[in-house]
Length: 288
Image (cartoon, rainbow, N blue to C red):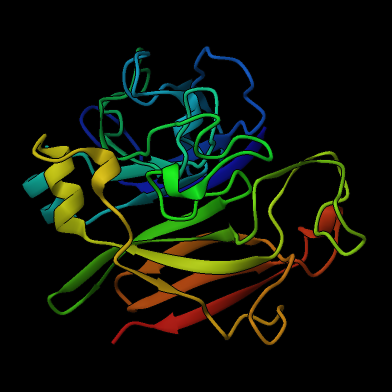
């Protein structure tokens, strides 16, 4: 269980102070039952409340589809497409009621200091699980997946809503497996992971772009959530780790979009520390 995304939310309803919202990534959720993934606290971390379940405890809502990243969308977009819901969370977990590809669920933060129940949420994006057809161990066929070239090693770690004039997108940052869905002991001495499990070498870091109008159609019930695909993929060459093809074992971290300063922050991991993840570099791009 890992604490992942955080987001600042101004006081709402009867609340007396601004809040800090956070997400919980329970990666190894290997049971069908769901779990809560969102908490909130005072700005200094005191008086934590939750965790809360995103949406009702019925499919397609599930803890294996939420909690890996957390960000906000502009209020105008939330009002136009999402019924006012402006916080978004998601996750990639290709089994146990997760999704074979990244997910996006929009929800409203609480209006009181001591709320109870589930968060009010709607789906924007999730991909169906076809197992073993899509990504079964050693037998999966990527052409059978909703998400293009999905592997069980794909991990999307951060997201945000980016605007430049009339151009808008929701972006997700992560590490993408380029190989097959091999399952077993490490297949080669230079494999990124030496443990038993899925190995999808080689890997590269990607930023995928989603059309916000298409996601809005899903939210309004006029389009299936698995029909939306990234319209472009960016492979940042500014990341420090990687060979000539941009392939690396390095992980990624979160994304922050500074709407006032028009900047995008992305975390590149892989520079040492526990499991080679604690030491990281923050890259900053300007949004024209």
